[in-house]
Image 1 (cartoon, rainbow, N blue to C red):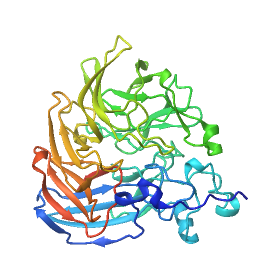
Image 2: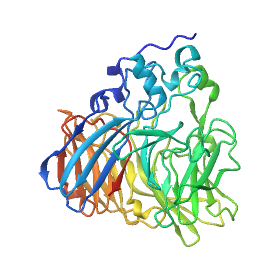
Image 3: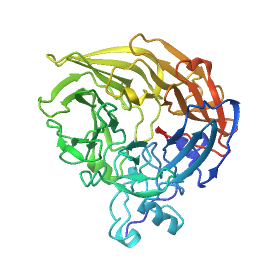
Image 4: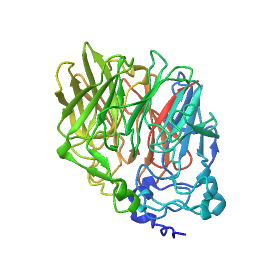
Amino acid sequence: MITAPAPVNPADYPFLSGCFAPIDSECDRRDLEVVAGEIPLELNGTYMRNGGNPRFTPLGGFVYPFEGDAMVHAVHLADGTASYRNRFIRTPALELEEKAGHAIWASLMSGYQPDPEVVGPDLAYRPKDLPSINIVRHNGRIIALAEQSRSYRITEDLRTLEAETLGGAFPMGFCAHPKVDPQTGEMVVFQYALWAPFLQWAVVDRDGRVVSGPNPVEGVDAAHMVHDFVITATKIVLVIAPAVFELERLLRGEGSPLDWRPDQGTRIAVIDRAGVEPTRWYRTDPFWTWHFGNGFDDGDDVVFDGVRWDHLGIDLAGDNGANAGDYTRFRLRPRTTDVQTQTVVDRQMEFPRIDDRRIGQRHSQVAVGTRIRQDIPVGQFDALMALDPDSGATALFDAGDLCVGEPCFAGDHLLTFAIDRTTYDSYLLILSAADVAAGPVAQIAIGSRVPLGLHGAWLPD
């Protein structure tokens, strides 16, 4: 039996301490205090936000944001009032660790996987399910999404139901950023893998049935990391950056499993959603994008935008020297392989979001997290910004001592969790999307700490 790595010292890891420090308690709080402003009466629904939150001290290291048990934080708004609930997603691995009273699985970088003597035959030699990245609701199902493991269905009150494999089409999971087309009700997903087929996509109809795929993306002959993508009304756009998995390095636990190969450049696949036209390929200088804003058809052109990095923004070995990229618009013309790029806003930012009612259609506003003070820790943002991707116009809210998370559209408003970096008190902020610079129209005290996390969704009643 191979010995597991030792527990880490959380103080040595920026994403295990400070505003990111995990919590181990679950709670329910009603009648939250509105410390400033008023909750808009038209906001009736639930804001759910996911994030990695280790239940026990991690073993052998910690890589943000792909490690850490999933904890979903939810604020329900109804008739000007707010309540809060948080729950762990209870995967089989987490339940086994809770019985043991300590972590059993180790960092992905360690190369260690528990054997059958420790976890039994069903869970041995396989990574831990970590559905800690995002939340989506489709066909009435709420899914806590993972990056490279199985996602899990949960209830409105955050009870864990079962692994979501889309009817068996994706037994080992699918992407963390599926796109739900508001016009058709279809959900488009993709999956990258460490073995052939290295990249696949599928379409799920409004009733939850996989009606196309999984379809392999021909021409992808290595394991590339692909975190996000965009759809238009007619196309699927997959950006394949030169971030290539070194499987042997991963198995040996020798540093980051990702190799940045800039000489390969970045390739972009434009796939016909109807499956009639052949895939179009484009090639450009190397760049990386964690998150896109949106894409749309502009005549025969495909246009999309997102936060562009010159390299892999967060090194999975832990070298997080860069904090974020700039906002860039890309245009792909049908009878050329060139990529036209335009920097829309040149400043550090991440977590771009649009109103989900505009997915796949022309959009005029993107909300992002950004930085005003350069001395705040890596991975933190002290401002929210709204930008117009056509004109480059911006509106900025300076959050001061508050660290803000990803902004999420809720109708005509923006929602985000925020944590005070001096007191660690946590809040839900509600801003008017039309006047972000005016600051919150309501600030709601959670009454307990909500660590900085990842992506969320507004689920209207």
